[in-house]
Image (cartoon, rainbow, N blue to C red; front, side, top):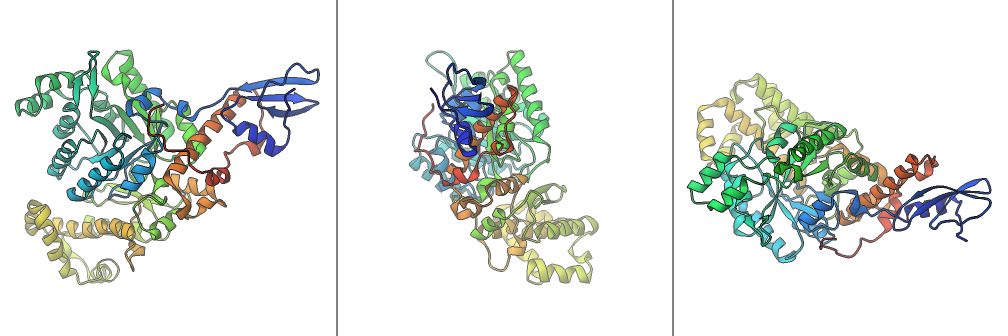
Length: 528
């Protein structure tokens, strides 16, 4: 006869053994758990059964097949190479998808990273970020050139407000007919969006006018252009809610169902967008958060902030230490360097840094003054003392020299436009503040710009008192495994609740201490 377990740790052990079924039993007036059917005993009543739970089955099997993954999990790109080669390699070898943080890096460094990733991961899947910058279309074009030249088969496309010719070029040049006559996509696009309007064009084929333009330029063959009109622009769309960096801070619980409805409408019409996967990002820092995303119907989950505090992230120990101390309330919005004049904000860490307040002050100065010469003496003195650490007169020559080799047209316009000149000087500080955080610049911790969302605080609360309390013990693959296994655990608890079982409170959280002590599973880059 199967032994029924009643003790707290014993019951949790049965619940957490996800590879085996779980039987909830009442025996001798007590409720316990067993991993086998208790059999026909007079004093035993079977209350509920929960079948085995496999973490990969929480998401979409199509997503796993499409990318050759073991788990429905992606680590989003973090600009400036924070999601580094080591970061991407660790997750790819664990069967998860990760995107190299190419945004903001010189093309030479991106090229070295791509070459290294191809060497380290000849068969495992990985991605690179492709960010849209309307002010610098040349950068997007040259990045796509690089990806095509080196055979990058997946990109995470971010900040796109509409299809661009180079995004379409990347997608269409990877289309061909398979032996079975079906369209094969050698270039996969995982789009990152925060609004339904943006998602809509990724659910549709590339615009005919862009395909015609590329066809006339000789970039696409007639067959590629025709096939591009039969598939959605993206393979997957990540719904980004309250996340680090650029964010609309919208609730995941509203955004995921909205995007799923849009995708399902495409499927009802038998249109190409009906096959697009929908992922969830923003605020996912605990097993319960990951389970909630899957429970809403997400095909995969995407993490960001929690990975930045891990050992493989290419940012400074000082930044990781601040991240590991963050609470959910330790985030703030601050002006973005790349969209400063438009008043666009990014979400950053406010704990241990003065950056959010200083950046907001810069935007007020820009809004209220016609140029640097219009600033009052007190503001000028504060800028020189707290932010620039040099006379204000020395700033524009330095900024102009930088722009001269990278964006000469903007530099020329700024010479005749004092307000633009002021904006560019202020953007010098905003741009360098994120680099100071990455490098751990001595004397600049008060100016660190660290992109961070509330998921970081949720993760820290979950792992408090475990080895993961300190960032040097955090590994991206271990964190991924713990979040997915924990999500599967919570799916089991949900099944039992739906069966009418009232579980004690101590069953209610997947134990972080056990996850932190467990080694990662062997490398598993192949598809299930």
